[in-house]
Amino acid sequence: MTGFDKIETVVLGIGNILLGDEGVGVHVVNRLKNAGLPPSVVLIDGATAGFRLLALFEEYSNCNFIIIDALKINTPEAGAYSGLNPKKITRQRNLKYPGIPQKGDIYLIPLKDFYKEAGPGLTGNSSISFHETSLMDVLDLFKATTGNEIKGFLIGINIFNSFDNKGMDLPMGICLSPVIESRISKIIDI
Image 1 (cartoon, rainbow, N blue to C red):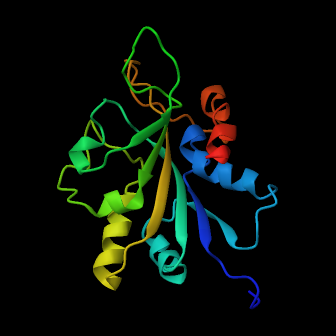
Image 2: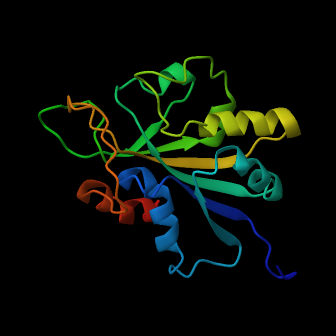
């Protein structure tokens, strides 16, 4: 990095590209590489780094983060159990199941909300992360060890069909489903 290249924003894509839609964050970051972003923005493929993100958060602790990740939001109250209040930016239209979270819904969650009283119960039917180590776990550990909070937003894409009785199906493959693929341009706009 030269003296002229001051990093102000980190765009971090998280996910496992081998599990289709679960890798949406990484796919978005890879597409942004050709977007001609200013040198003050750094793009990072976080893959399934888990606690290895701590070093990244330390290196860029003075920057604003935009974290892009797949979410599992299967009930209208899915964020409430954890103290999060996800703001739905867009939603897929489904007249048969109005008010029910849909695959392809996009949520914007301030990272500061992750530091509020999250409480127990991060697993089970109302989880919002697919990773064994959730983003909330990593942010909490970072704050506990450094005393600092990461600033920015999570752009979360619901990859779960809550009205589908088959449950969560993460097929092996590196391609995104048509529904999630159709949301990429909106995610980039955000």
